Amino acid sequence: MPSVYFQTFGCQMNTADSDAIYQLLAQRGFVLNDSCVGSDLIIVNTCSVREAAEKRALARIAEFANGKKNHPGQKLWVIGCMAERLGDALKKDIPGIDNIIGAKQMERIDDVIESQFPKCQGDDKTSSSIFQKTAVTDFVPVMRGCDNYCAYCVVPYVRGREMSVPYDVIESAVKQKVGAGIREITFLGQNVNSYNHGGIDFPELLSRMAGVDGLERIRFTTSHPKDCTGRLIDVMASSPKIAAHLHLPFQAGSDRILALMNRRYTASQYRGFIDTVKKRVPGVDLTSDIMVGFPSETDAEFRETLALVRDIRFTAAFMFAYSPREGTAAALMREGISKAEKLARLSELIALQTEITREIYEKSVGEELEVLVTGRQQKRDRAWMGQDRGCKRVLISCEEGVAGMIFKVRAVKSSGMTLIAERVGQ
Ligand code: 5AD
Ligand code: SF4
Picture 1 (spheres, helix red, strand yellow):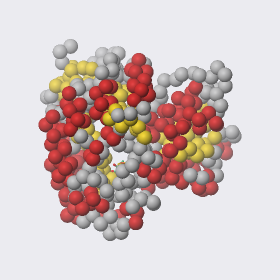
Picture 2: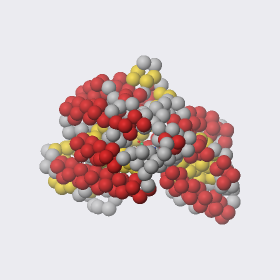
Picture 3: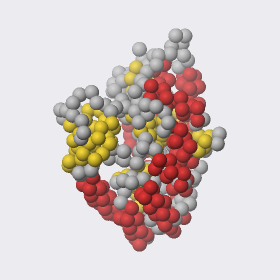
Picture 4: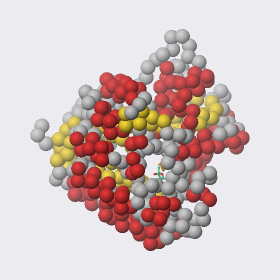
């Protein structure tokens, strides 16, 4: 049987895309390999969001291309955002690449795979997902692409226009996964909360999915502040199945920078929305994406970002130094900040956020939590990993066979970014 090896860079959407391709290949008799050595097909799924991500992928692709010398007949595919951005130019730079499948082709990936590996009669093996986060949690993409054109971002160019998945397709994917034992689903989209198909918007989608029997938890990412409505908060507040977690990138704390970024909200609008969420969804975990060193950002403007981080108290955040991307509006702006200054701002921000994360975990000690057990902790006997209704990682000590169950636990200790907990009321 032919074998395939995946290397997936970037966001959760790429993980979901790699999985979708694996499903199609598995139907055609492919088995998954956990090493590139001896694989008939190597697929590298790439990210273009920052230059560093592209450099890392390019280095890996060059290694795989070189390794083909020892594997006659081995094929190398490059897919995803960088494949879309650079296209056939990649093949010229790295001659070992056999096929390029850009991110926009994910819409018609069934046809793309069929053209490469036509299905034979009798081929239709079903296979369990290999990229699902655990045996009890999985992803469902509900919309693709982005129409927002934030000035720094390459995503609208490589992923294309926004497209929502029809409601019935989502519903059957969810029910099929729940039937196969999945307990928690994360809805994915570049702007998941701008979902709209046939009059069903994102709050409506969430509230309908909260009615699916056997589905215990619903998560979603990534939301854009401009599409956050009161109804979204209403649904989060009213359904215990919807995680008490909102990932809401704010990027920068200065209104001048937010306007240059084309984000379409002000810092005070963002703060106002977050205040309402905190009031309506008690104990909510908030997380964010934050960028430093956008062109012309002054030190005082960077301090506004720090002030917002200090006031809101995110449970965690992804933090980045601005990296110019060719073709975007910001790439034409004069940066006016040295690399060293950008990195100094990034370290100051990371230090502040790390301290807040530590304090928030510390404050949870003594609290009673509902934890969905996701799997065993490899290194310790009797230890199981899980996640609370927010986004905190929890380690529980208990007996065998509990993955997929929801336990009431009490946090007894915090170790940085994990809570250690004991079961209560067994
Ligand atoms: N430079 C640095 N960070 C970026 N992001 C997007 N584009 C860039 C860029 N050019 C960050 C944003 C976004 C996250 C996915 O990546 O914070 O929310
Ligand atoms: Fe990029 Fe902005 Fe779209 Fe997010 S909303 S994918 S940051 S353009």
